[in-house]
Length: 165
Image (cartoon, rainbow, N blue to C red):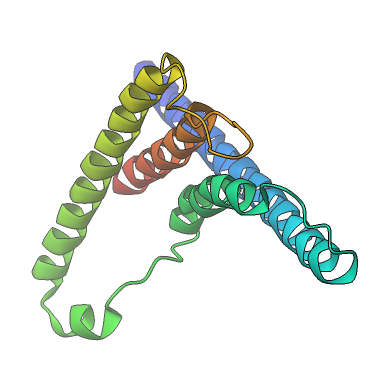
């Protein structure tokens, strides 16, 4: 019985750690979104008021969108904020609902785990590209943003796993 208590404590600690990482990533996504907004406003003001736009704004906003768009996935799953078809699910028998939920969790976990893994492999390849692995105007390398995508997908996969268990 003592080992069961230890496993429960470890599971709770792991769940808490994943949820804290989800919250931290969501805060990071909010900050990146604010930076994107300020950069865009600065570019528009510079372009129309001073005839001096900020060079590479669209590149940076595109790259920052990876963080702003993916780092909130795990937090959204934690809060059960993803879209679900409740109207249809409520009309199904309890057993069918349970089976469909299990299937959805398994597909989500496997799918986002595969995304995480494949993006990691792609980022490793991009690290060693001589010139093709950077943006056209500013020369910002793509691979750090691939790792940021990997973090978002990995956190979502772990959060789905915690919900499933």
